[in-house]
Image 1 (spheres, rainbow, N blue to C red):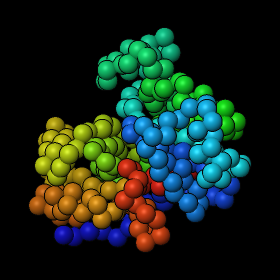
Image 2: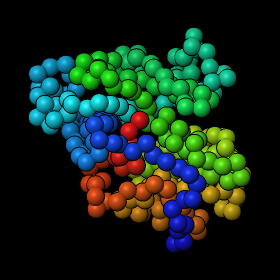
Image 3: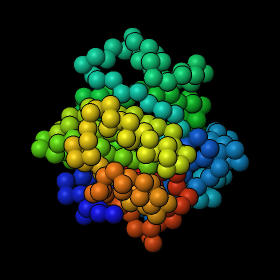
Amino acid sequence: MVTGPPYSMPFNKNIIKEKELSIHIFRDGFSFCTHSTRLFFDVKSNPIKKDNAFKKLLEDNSLLDFQKVSCIYFNRPATFVPQSLYHSSKTENYLKHNIDHNSSLKITGDDSLNKEIKILYEIQEDKQKALKHYFRNISFSHYTKVLYDYLSKGVKGDAGTVFYLHMQNQQFEVMIFDGEQLSFYNSYPCKNEDDFLYFVLAIAEERALDSTGFSIVFLGKYDRYNSYYKALENYKEKLEYIDGIDSAVFNLEQHPAPFFINIFD
């Protein structure tokens, strides 16, 4: 396999600093990430609630003394709407167009940093209220907002068509930029390499792209996904990677989305 060097564009993560805490909410668990510690908890055994048990978990792990706290949601899908087309009165319709809306959940939205995209998604309001109770200075965002902001700050107009692939447990995301413009975003279930290859190649076919007509850039390079990288070898000879993390420093195997393990947003 031919792999490129770390991608040369000026991509920069907002890395967790001292006195900063980043909370990641997944379907079956959650993590607390600081500049030096990564903690992971099962949500069934440790529900996020405004009660003594959750308070004790925070106290026992010294998680209540941070100057800045962010929470990134991974547990529900998101819908992207161009700001030029967005109307607040149609929020539920936008969401229903792409996902099955759960009426017991609250719809919320993030604005991209460049103000071009509205990111809509659902939250469990009781969990958010509990986190606000313990972390008065907390901010919330969806992980796709973080990905889009990260990429849109680094892309260049002369880069051509680039598929940016973000891998996580049981799914992956594709964001396609044509130059500086986002032209496609979607998230796909992915149980194995065949699923992965099928979706990536189907996207290329729908856009009438042959293997030389676009670049593929993975967000990070991690041992657990080596078989997925290799699955693209027969189709795309050169793969590139940006902003990997040293697995010798962090235990990446526990985190469902390792690219985010050191991000504060």
